[in-house]
Length: 281
Length: 281
Image 1 (cartoon, rainbow over the protein chains, first blue to last red):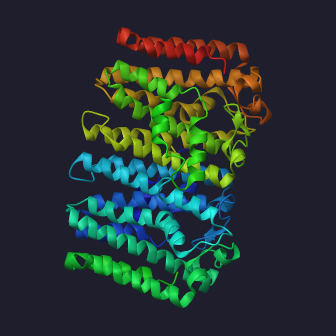
Image 2 (image 1 turned 180 degrees about the horizontal axis):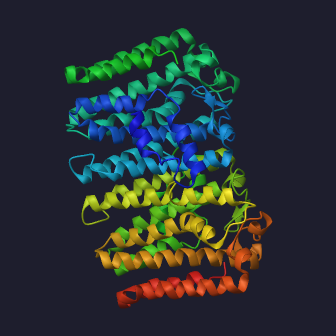
Image 3 (image 1 turned 180 degrees about the vertical axis):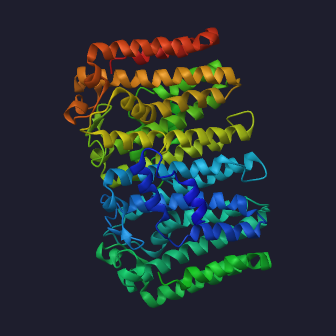
């Protein structure tokens, strides 16, 4: 994944150099690559060629990377630390961070359209549409808008879930489905993956909230305790740490139940469910 | 075009409502619709069905609209007035403006992939790629990065042209080609349109610089005289108003020469060349 991303990102020598340097800084500076891992694992379920999945995975990761750059900006979460390094607007400047995010989003769609990734081009257009909707105002960007509007407001559990299904869940779901759509995907399998993705997306966020509350900044690689400091509702603030941890385990169990009909082909997706719930950063 | 855009933009009743309200405010608040007009006119050359071209035109206009929203933000040009109204970050807030731009970009790619726009899906994937590259770091976003880096620096004419070919030219070229690609487009026609688009894109910018220097804010609908105030190199600062006006006319002549082989089918493109050079706002 690292080399595929490095290959797609414009080289440092290409003008405008500072923008390209900042794009590479934003994307290649670490990250767990959860969305690519999910795409590869779902691709395995659908018997997809890795030479295809790697591009779909890169597109999803670039959307994620762009969202982090914009999310960290002063107008949004105003965060100075990401993946243990200064955020893009701190290392470069705000205007560059804005353009880095914009250009990374464009690059994601360039990648998704650049070469055959599905058995027919019409199916690949559906992949473009899936990613666009997952990223847009009824997906990730919409989730961030709901998140911003929720600062200082009492959300109940259903509202919190609605926010996260958009903010994190939509792109995680798209990552799983894009990986699988590079191969052969019967409707029943797609439905199972969809259910898995929804559970994993929420589990990811529940664990994020637990880690934000419990893990030191140095381990996390981003500023810890931000949500409480910003008076943002989280699974921890609504449920407490113990119940939030239980909820993550329940969601993992639901995710694995969804995979049951897929048998051994889904083993990596099960491992990723474990990773999502057991991760410590 | 207005009704197509209004149809594609999420309705006000759909959550997150404030984001959708701001997206509609950003897009539906006027604008010359030069890029859609170019797409429709180029579609006519290629015998494209208007039912297809309107979606390609909407996608190009949404990329343009998103770029204005981000460009007006305090981290970039810091402008309070656009199309005679407060800019999005002034009317709403900065975080909303950031997300509006992000979501409009996603929506553009959603539209371009949502339904058949070309005779085969593989050709339509090329349209997605064309728009992504025109918007990205080697196109519009790259041009904005070069623009920012040029503040207070002495650019020569070649460097100024390089900047504008990216910042404005790439999306204008894409608008022309996307419209034409909805129809039948032999290579020779594509080459003629490409040459036309390059000339028109530059002419558009030269006229923009003249208007910025000579037109009052009230007529322009955006803050006039910004470039000089920001010590930005322009065609007027490099050439003076008289020579800049001559250059615009020369570029129009070049654009029309490129159209000569296309005959009467290109009449609307010729009219648009006139409009671009003769416009007063």
